[in-house]
Image 1 (cartoon, rainbow, N blue to C red):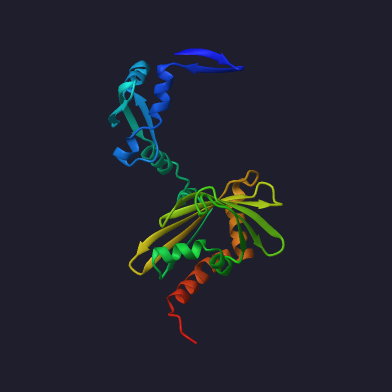
Image 2: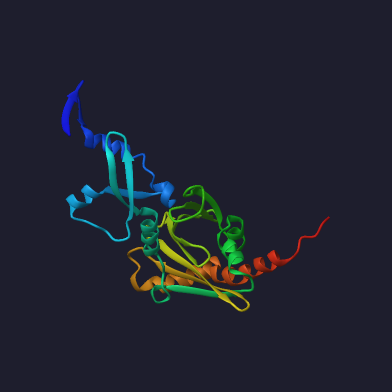
Length: 246
């Protein structure tokens, strides 16, 4: 290829450049069903001195350019592996406060009780306004604005989202510098329903050994423990009642 300048614009021209453009219209998706992949030519891999394992080999043929041996990698699988490895979980031993209750309901139903705004208003006593979602759905990166009464306001961000296993959120309180809490909700199936854990870890600086003490008083003041244990069970019981016609 050569570099040339036309009308003040620098560009590359030549058969290799034409090949790159033609390779963008390949048949890998048709052969593999992949929606995201990286393609390399045999010459390109040889130049880099690389040959990753598990590559899809395919020959592409183009008029005036002949046959080109290509090797492709499924990026979707790699992305899924990276996402799976990027877990954000408050472990029991790292939590400053752990609330546990057994709810007589299946995991999918408890998941809904923990996440649906109207359900959270019932058991947690907060008003939730979704601010942003990922692809129109709740997932890692989604944000909500939460209000508890007239004086407590916070931004809640989903850090990790694994239906119906667990999810982790960050709650950043407005007006109270350094008040950042990570909370993991972990669901475990039991013979009678679902064991639900709420693990809290204060992430803000400046509190040190007062973390657990503060968590205790937060539960006392806002009734988190009572709401978590009692209201979840009440909501689950209400959900099990059949609707009656008027």
